[in-house]
Length: 181
Image (cartoon, rainbow, N blue to C red; front, side, top):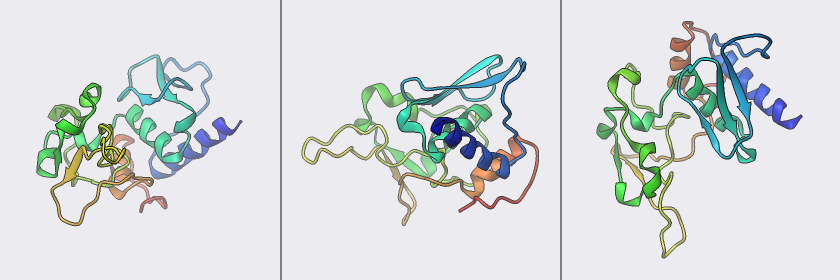
């Protein structure tokens, strides 16, 4: 019951910020199938038919649900934009070897470049995401560093103005959102 309520509440925020509507499946050919598999993940954009979105037990936070659903709706990671090198530096040497794919640039055709780079987007990883463990401190190492002074890459727990604008572009509408930080 908690799982369904957490997902429903998170989806309602996305509905209130865009013109997307999430309804229980009846006989729709294309649908989002939310399951508790290992990890938090989703395909990016509509794949057709049954589309898996995984929310393991540790994924049941609003911001993680939003992140994965936003992938399903078509949004990519901000830090994978083709122009990201103007805004952040990737410390490849600190990234876990099997996680490099999470930092590869995505081609222009797959990414919306009509917005300012959003360091605080829900679609941007924090600065130590998938970092190797520092043997001296036991902490994850820095994997991304902002090139703008005064910016920190921390966990992002809220929709930003640009997140909402992108959702509105994808859902072809404009509406005021009370959920923007």
